Amino acid sequence: MHSGPMTDQVIAGLDPEPGATAGGEPRLARASPAFNGVYPILATPFHADESVDHESLAKLLEFMLRIGVDGVTILGVLGEANRLGDAEREAIVRTTVSRVAGRCAVIVGISHPGTRATIDLGAMASLHGADAVMVAPSAEGAPSDARVAEYFARVCAASTLPVVLQDHPASTAVHMSAPLIARIAADNARIACIKAEAVPSAPKIAALRAALARETPMLTGLGGLYGQFDLDAGSSGYNTGFAFPEVLQAQVRAHVSGDAALARRIWSHFLPLIVFEQQPGVAVRKELLRRRGLLADATVRHPGAALAQVGAHALSSLIDWVMPGVDISEPLDVLRILR
Image (cartoon, rainbow, N blue to C red; front, side, top):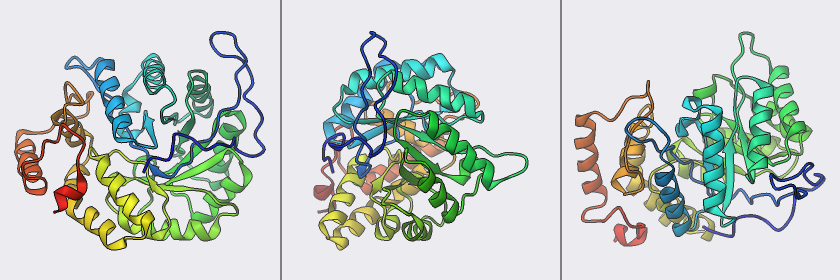
């Protein structure tokens, strides 16, 4: 569901962005993404020697634009951001913003165990033209709701961009209650979206809907694993990295149009692939993207593991079962596959 890259309004109450662009021109406040629809989280492509493959990144971006996604997120957990150096992160942001050229929203993951480092990564993303940043908290030796709230307060106060609050305890080991997230959103106008990935996700989304003091979009993640339940609970779409985002787009379109039966049929048909892709790590997703012709190589940075041969054979059988005779290098005609 592509409704244009961004809304027409700048977030209420936010000042124009201070400072200047790299070329010395004054930098104006950018419009906020709508945060509904489908925002794929992109894998970071690597050559066989583990160097960043910017050519494959460009190809991946062009495919996402071709199918009309509402935005993309780079440098997320499954974008292997924690295995990238600062210069590599910056180069990836530059490539992404340049290639997208305003045709959809660009969200940049900036999470870091250090608050100051998170703020600096956010400033870098803003400098190079990102439209929003995604932030998750980090585990501390003595867990504290107050400390988590302070982390988001400092990051939001320093940010010149809308902030997506990521609630993903599986990767952060930080468990934020619905009241805590609602308080953080109420206290920080920069919070523009919540990426809801705490399981059970549907009850958490419903609880947040009741707790939030202002309307705040919520996007579901977790590879789409609980996607239909989350949409039914009030999610406004997806912010996840499933290798077939056309499926999620078709499901969201059906859901928004009120065709609940079709939405569930789409999701359930492709659910075996969604489940298979959700195995630990990013190897399955990268192999699928390679088979789609979007990555030249499925390399995962060490110490991440590549897909074992037995897994590759199982994946081939699964693709043939779910999409017999379909050329997956082309955008999927989801409704035709269902017929």
